[in-house]
Picture (tube, one colour):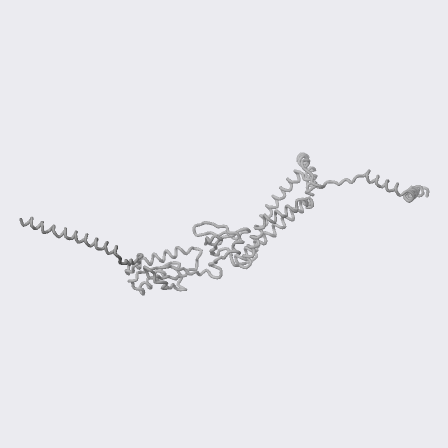
Length: 379
């Protein structure tokens, strides 16, 4: 009872003092707050750095000492401390994440290919989605392992997000464009396409690979063009193998006006049929295209089903076969011909008269020579 009374007495006195002298109570409270300043402890930007350091120190004092020295070098941003040890730990974990993500992507791709039977476009789309999922999981696991305090980046988050938005805008645009192209199956690996750029230059080749950023197109001369995915969605693309790989080739030919047109057509069809890659169905055909200035112009229409092997070699083979057939049958391939019409005037008439007089004089001179010679021979 006595103890309780003793403890209760000061409380009663304090309460009475505060009631009788409120200013004194306020002063006392302010003095107590001044006497105990608020001390905010610093936090590590990488939460796992301290625990990893303690675990390593328990196993090896030498390595633990090195880590202590690295941890002592650093700076503080607000209430967060960033040291050399934490930065080194982040680099090591990032390297491990990259290696694990690459290995995981390859394993996921092989497992996906074994379990599914899809066309090349759907298979490539599935592989890309699996790659994105694996990388996202690896990054989240790395952040969880490091225990990174994301609030430490609040100072730089605005500028960093703005830089990412402007710097990676095209990258993400090309990524989404590649996924859309694979989803609608308008362009897939193995297709033969012709695309024109803004300057009007056309690129013809076969698609080898659709990457995250660009499409790899290989031409017949083994040049590989990397075309951004967005360009294939913005510009006009001519796909030679979208719904069918059967492609028609046109071979222009001109013959002389004095030749037999029917015989020339038969020879053209024969030359087209002799070409190895020309299909029998649809059969080749010959069209009379135009009456030209120097020749009668024809066009040989023939079909192939392997445009990835090129079209210029087929046209060359048809023309070579036709050359020898024309030589055998006497069909002439004419040279350019021009007709000149000269109008008569005074100066032109004088020129013609002078030329005629000069010719007559030469004829007279040559005519007198034999008579003189004959006279000499007679004498």
